[in-house]
Length: 495
Image 1 (cartoon, rainbow, N blue to C red):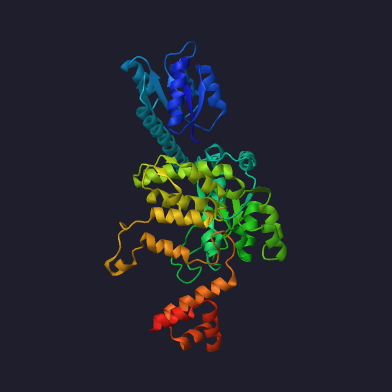
Image 2 (image 1 turned 120 degrees about the horizontal axis):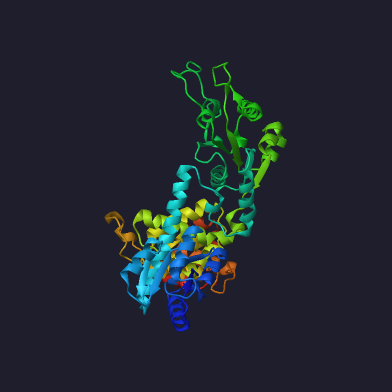
């Protein structure tokens, strides 16, 4: 559940506000003074919004807002006061408050205010991340993570940023390796300088040298003018080589030379160029295994693998699934102009139970689709049909599909007869006979009986055609009809 902090020195008012926030579906943490509130904010980074009383002894609400600004604590604050002084409220807004209400507040007003504040917090994070990414200042603290498995990664990012050491990032596809590379640059003294990303697996082997190192006029057919390579574009900054294990031998040799002395020759040129580039590489395969087969130079492997970082898959960092989902929900909701505020508990459980074989990239795409499909302001399991299909039991899926079925979906006139009604959906699930109602495998005799019934209906009782399709003799077919009590029914249908 989403955590909110409520700060009030009046016990009765604090209790009342707590109860309303819990009723609205929030997980509540409370404090009865400003100093305690600041201590909680400094240690608990999971708080998404604050309801702050302005008038308190010792450290009042204004002082809390000032200290939050100085300490760069960006959690959205809703201020409350017993006096409707516009001057007081305006001052609080200037110090960073996002909303206010006068005591006593109604349940509806409090719930809406908290939802808006949380949505604003997500949007501000999205905007901040996008701004820092574009400016080249995205750093370790901007990575959305609560997982212990990622704590080591973040510490390694901070250590790697203190030097120009070559970094090799290993991990499955979609785990965020490029984000790690950007965080290393954004935390280093190269922040704000060029960050050039090259996917080595997406470039043809006969073109990769000219793309990485550039070429001179006339170097090959069609080279009507010279062109800078990616290393020259990244001069002074960082080049990120994705799937570095896919480099062909000639490009590997040139890359080794750049690592050793920063020099290279463009394709078609004998003149040496020098660049000051930090090299960060990544791979979805074990580069050491590739090197041991001879497909990748061992000396280059050891030059790239000076500072290895392994990024764990999303299934090993489940604590990050919900924060990432909330981040994507806010981002796509804002981009699409849709008001999506929350995620149901059932949805959270479903997302946590899924293995995410394609990691964060798959989660991002799933949330995008869910935001578009959502009917209300809360994401529910039905908004994740593909994930729901993999995590739900057969009976749960059957029930959810029937409940969600509707004839109001637009259908092309040519396909009008294909509209699914509830009866059709029930029949579709009931025809799935491999599993019985008790969850056990259906006996072979029952499956055979159903198959013969289906063949009788399909071929309208023509025994020769049925026998041919089932690859059995007619005498065997007649025996099975009698055995399963289908002979009389078939005679009636044929008559």
